[in-house]
Image 1 (cartoon, helix red, strand yellow):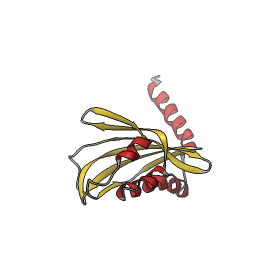
Image 2 (cartoon, one colour):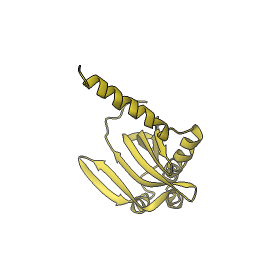
Image 3 (cartoon, helix red, strand yellow):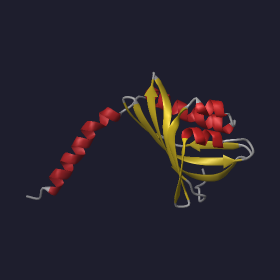
Image 4 (cartoon, helix red, strand yellow):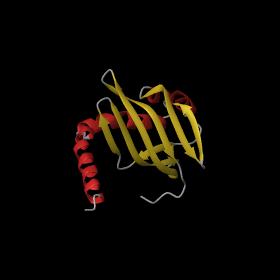
Length: 151
């Protein structure tokens, strides 16, 4: 008897059994996405106070650019966002949200616009923690490319 299909079925069923632990309601997902959208709204206004209110300043940022990883804290990232680059906007699409207790992550494709035109795109990976009943961003990683699909 070939046990490979049986083992694969056991692994699949175990994964499906664990899935409810990560299931979330639309309200839960909205609560997790709220600080993400607030962060992007603050960026668009170059409002560092609004951005800082959504993050743990000691959290980490990893920006993958041209095969290199640029690292900084979330506080340093917020300090880096200053007027002078024209109007900016980051848009995420079809976010995948996973929540387990007070830990959550958002994975989403994004487009970064400068003066209304797509400058670059990629994927955002944002992890959040809930402290004192409030979701805050604890870390961000993203990649970047300029060959962005038209939307």
